[in-house]
Length: 612
Image (cartoon, rainbow, N blue to C red):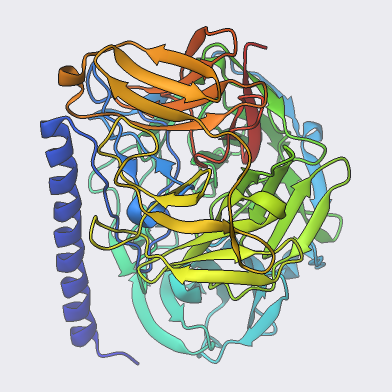
């Protein structure tokens, strides 16, 4: 057993350290906002998961857009808008409730078969793994790629009822043990070996997960205090949990800067549940207290209307990050998955049309530790995706081609590899985002050709940070210039052949030159002028990068007061598209040869095509 006093002191130290980290981040952000400039912001990773993708409202009339580079950048920069003081409220336009037959029912893989009264209790770990506790066998089972079983050695024999309440970071399980008749309950913390770590007596049976740990939920209707914190997580998740409350005629769910208001004329029962989705939305199971109405499953999307489904009297056993609910049917657990909305919310990118990426959709069903698959375009125009979990490169050609990468690529919170570019001879270039990162060239066969040290952050004197493709290879970031490539950019790695010899890409790459008249962009013999502000007014240049189109035009992505996609067409015309509200996750190699932009929508990668 752990010394409670020592544990308390340790938790106090963690809180103090966390407060200091938050203050540091707030100071950095405030300096950006006060000076109204773009600067690299290096975010601490440690045990934290990547920042979730949330589209937030503007802080003021002029939107500030810090680019999270350094740890979270290279070509896979996450664009996070600075949160405003209020929430972005999403209220459904109608209250249509679809029958449960609209949900797709799928058995679990591997299946979990059981008699209803003898079924194990379920919870979902922060990384999305389903975990089951079997009271009869006294075992915890993790249903990941290869299920593994852990015998629980804690003394739980005296309890009439034991159920798995939550699984926190580090695979620590939290069991609720006690007597429903006597209303006496204990919260028992179990480590990954199955041994008891800590036991808290005198708790209430209604418990919910929050960002810092587990707390008692006193009521649903926004009472203060909202609940007594029972235990801190063993380790920090960096993971946001939704908060649910009920008011007259409505249920409200808040997650980060998003708030959903859902019509619900019933009293909210304690068996209701809420959980985060991987796309920054949430999924809710509403259960009326009196049982005088049907249970409902509601999918709350971050960029669209909520979807509501009637579950009748079916009990939801667990909610998963892909928006599915697990219920018991006909002797086994099944997963009920809502249909994916097909429409792209036009307000996120006016003038752009969403298209599916075929022939097989590229999904983002990843735990918070992993991003969506990063993508790049091969010299012949094929989309190539890198899956860091499966360690595969997939060429989406007429016939999909999958290559298993055999190079030594670390997979951890501190260092993740992302696809930067596909160079000549179909050689893939991957960058490791971490303090001791690497830049690696991988042959089409999956074997390593060459690598060099390349940390996730750098300076003029110390190479590192984001890299971008030009004719000679990959250059390091230098965002203090309107010229492209920036004059101070360092060659991070030349393009190489299969033997590792430096070569030059024969394809044309755009260049940009800052002049008194504006920014002159060239590609081969073609030239465009971005005449917007004089050189003196562009003292703080926007962060921009330039990529060629297959028709001889250029695509420009510009991050300043707003986020813009510019199409520089071969006939000399220039089209502007405001994409400030678009959840960009993969940059800049997510521009296709036809000028379309790859972005994220409802756990999938989609193509946003201009002028369609």
